Structures are given as structure tokens and as C-alpha cells.
Image (cartoon, rainbow, N blue to C red):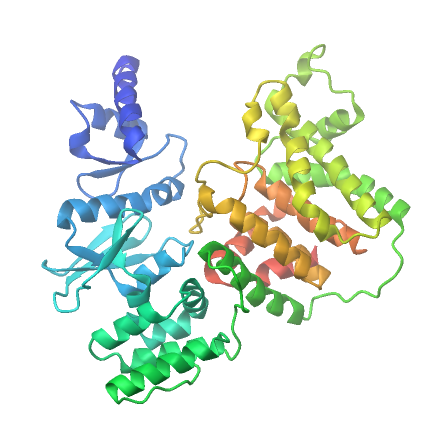
Length: 504
């Protein structure tokens, strides 16, 4: 294949990418599809469908597929069924509550079709079956997908979903300010007695006694069927406390924090520390002693090729690329310089917090932007990246390499970060605060780059300000570290990450 043929194919791909990252075979002219596939710029999904990729992607890398997953589902279902399909109640409810994990299987009901399973990359699939009688009278479109309304999805999911997904049910209920819509579904659909009891019990557990009693009274006087107020969940306490927020992203963060803080606080490994006066001079000395190791490991975890000599040269001011040819390793050196400047700013934040007797968590909302600015300021000064990247939070969707977790969309980041800092300030246990400060920051992923370094800065600022040592996470432990974060993000298990941090 000549470079000219590939270049022509890439130009066509560039034009197609303006409409998305999922393509049909018929979108390509001539042999362009063959050239692009051979070069690794597109990969097959099922016969006739492709997603964009990159030649550098390794076998088994799911990032490119996950970035186009929902787009494929929407385009495939629309092409095959038009509007005569709907995702089942369970997936519909997860979409409404902005569930962040790519599901392994999506179930679709149609007005007319044969039952079929469509196998997709990375062990995912679609399961399609006809269900004309139970096809919803009303659907809504979210992200170009036809789904049940939130109220009907809540009424349609069964007891097993309630027990396995208590957080999602609580988030869904919190999104519904007035239960009139729920009552309308319960009273106009067949066989809703059990659903009425489940929702009534969930409302009562959530502290919405008046809504629970209203639902019970209206349903019983209308249908003459008894409604139970028994708790439908396995857990006896709610994940969400009474909240004025109705944003599903903010509600999810509150739920995560409540669930995980209880678990961390109860772990045997959680160190208990006597309140003693904090020695600022000792803190500064400890941070300066750990700086070189921390910079080396933190940058190496993110894939930068840095040496301890380079870090020492950058921090001492001896790095001079204008006069020394060996200093022209721009990318890695600028990352090292940015880390040094950010580290110094974090140190000053900690010192000022202690000197003024202020809780570090009250300063983080303003200070974290300064840290981020310092992290990338050297790259901006040299023109490696554009100045607009220092303006603030990300303006595009991001995907995490090798993870099923998809960070919140850019439109949700500001509200999510506001909730994040509120949760930090309310948390009384510094150990919980530091661990979840790290985890939730990465879960939101508010910046286009540098989120891992920033999350570790937040964690250590909280630790050090409360008299605990600065934690250095070593590059040799990267796989364990990343797997623990994935367990917390996808499997709902914070213990491996908490244990990993505390053992360090």
C-alpha cells in the first residue's frame, strides 16, 4: 500500500469522523476501508460495521471500542428497527441515572422481530426479543436511544434489580420530585401491585414518608389491593441522605461517598491517630525528602520517561535546554518541571492551611486549580500545549484506557466538582477524606490530563495536613494500583484501594 493511497483513505476518514466514530462499510469509497483496516485506523464490530481505532492500540485494548459503544448501539438499532424498539426497563433506568459503566449486555425489546443475540467486541452483546404487549406506550430519547420514561422504568424493574442496585433506585427516586408520574404508571398498567409496594418501601427508607403514605393511600383506595411499606432492599440504611440536589451525577457521588466512607472507617487497617500538635518544620523537611521519589514514581505511573537525575536537575534550576543539548528531551523534562512547580504550590497550600488553622478541605476548591496550572504551565510557556488548556475543566468527553468506567460528560463536571468539594468539607475522618478525595477525583476525571497526579496531590494534602506522612505510590505497584481503582469504579469494592493506600 502506497503512502498516497493511505493518505487519501485517511482524508476520507477525517471527513467521516465529523459525524462520529462508528462507520458502515458503505461509508467508504473504493478500497479505502481495506487500507484503513490494514493500517489499524478502523476495526470491525460486526459484519458491515466499524469503529475508529489507532495503529498504536494494543491487542485487547478496549478504549476505542468503549468510546464508540453507545454511538454504535444507537446507530445499529435505528438502522435495523427505526423507532420500533426500546431498551429494557433495567438498562433504561441505568441510563436515566447516568450509570458510568459500560454494560456487558444490553437487552432490547421490539414491536416485531425474531429473538437474537448480537455478539460485540470485548465480551459485550445485544439481546433482542419481541414484546408487543408490553412495549411502552411512551418512550423518551436519551443519547439517541429509545428508552422507558424514568417513572415507568422504576415501576417495571423487579425485586432482584432493587436488591442488586439499591444505589440506582435511590438516585432514580431522588430525581423524581413529585410522585404523580409514578402513580399514573402504577394505576394505568396491569399487575403493578408488587411494584407499588417496592416503591412505597423505598420511599419510606429514603425518608419520604409523606410520599410513601400518599402512594399507599391512593393505590389502595383505587385498586382495593394492599400496599406494603416494607424495605425492598437488603441494606437497612439508605445510601443517600435527604438532598436538595436532583442532578443524577451529584446524587451518584453522594451515594458513593456514603457507601465507601462507612466501609473504610470500619476497616481494621484504618490507623487511628491521637491529636497532637503539627510541626510545620518537620512537615516541610519530610516533603522535601520525599519529593524526588514522589516525582519519579508519580510521573512514571503516567507513562513519562524520567530519571531521578532529570528530576534533580529540574528542581535545582540546572535544567537549561537552550544551552544544553542533553536537556532537549522536551516532553519528559517539561512534565518534570511542571511536577516540581505543582509540588511546591501544594506544599505552600498545606503550610498556609496549618498556619491559619483552616481545614485543608475548605481550601481545595480554590487551590486545586492553582496546582493544575503549575503542573502544565511549563508546557504552555514553551508552546507545547495551548494556553486554553489551563482555563479550567475539560471541554470534551474522556475515556480511560482499559476501563469499563466512563467518566462523567463534560457538561456534568462543574456540578460534580461542586458536590465533590462539599463532600470533602463534610467528611470528619481524615483517612476516609484522603482516600475518597483521591478516588472520587479520578472517578470524575475533571481535566483533560493530569488527573492521576492531581488526585494524588489531593490525597497527600489531606494526609499531611492531618499529621500523616506523604504517601508515595511506586511505579512498580502500578498494576495493583490501577486494578484497585477499577474495582472501586466498576465492581463497587473500595477495600482493595483503601488497603493499598494505607499499606503504603
